[in-house]
Image 1: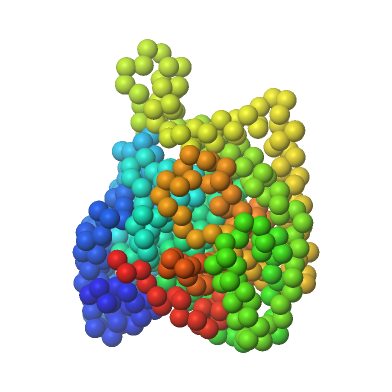
Image 2 (image 1 turned 180 degrees about the vertical axis):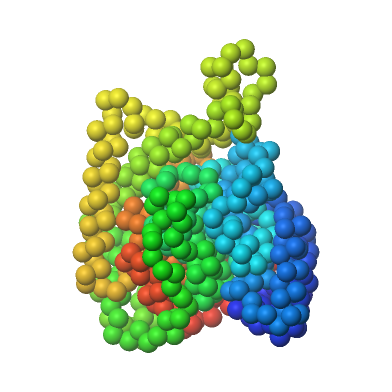
Length: 487
């Protein structure tokens, strides 16, 4: 059974249709794998066995009747624990929501259920999706399946670790500044952030509403493309949702890319790059040349301001979004408060972790009277300039490439005492969120210690099919994606 769990979703789907295995057996195998590994990994906050097995039974009934199966039906999936699934705990890995049971389904969750995809559990994350290492969870740290002493990346570390360790075949994460692509890079799998508005955010616990986007984790580009097809589409419940038809993203995976122009982002190819990552990037450039692409060096001069822009805008939006967690309507409430002000302050002081408090304070400061124009307004103006840099770049090239991260996964605790060093981990990923463009991390090799390296591919807004095509052709030129963590 473990051998079957190591296969891609496409391969598992074939096995289900050929009746080599039942959906119930596959789902039960995933739970057995989780039981075996969870003490080491910490990838899940809670499991949803009843929901998953009920879904799997429906798949088996359809197969028995000879009915057509929806895309990815019967394939075990992990759901990041900031997305609502009715009747399950949705905690955002925060003490303030430790016992919150969701009364409704997120739009993407409903789409998964409609496609008969068994949701095996709620994956651990950095509290309220704030972090780059998944060490900020209120409950437990997530460990990297390739080396249990290293971080899996954040904030969607549990989702990435569950796929890399074959506890789940697919997973969903949310990406606000790299929270899908960074863990995908550190865990040696595929992680993709769609164009802003492609996927509904209804039912996602908000961190920064103008940056958040839900996207897929998988062990192959094809699986990621199929999962995006399942979850994307217009949603009237989300005012930022784009009213566009859903594409069959996997249809153009095998298209020839000869003659395509690949831009190498100059600003992300020098400073702070580890030797192993630099070598992997040189190899990636050579791969695209062999595939017939033209390599163009591209400069994005405003990119260097991305970190500063992001940590003003994201913290300002988080300060506003997290104001709702006050102990009044739901979630944790401090016991024995003498008055309402004490209840507010003590509830939030006891319920939020240090990183969340830090970001709330930064955001409140940036939005405060006298500082709004100097910080928030200026950051919004600079965000427009970063977006313009990308617009100009995509006039010259089809896609842009860079390292997903300047380094590979670091040791647990190595950057915990230095928030600035932790924030710099996202230097390569943040700008795609600011510009609202799609980005993907695909396995691109290993460092001298055997830790995975990710290649980031970026495309213009709404060009997901092109993005998947370019990433798939790179993926198929190597066997990096076939190598799994030995855990």
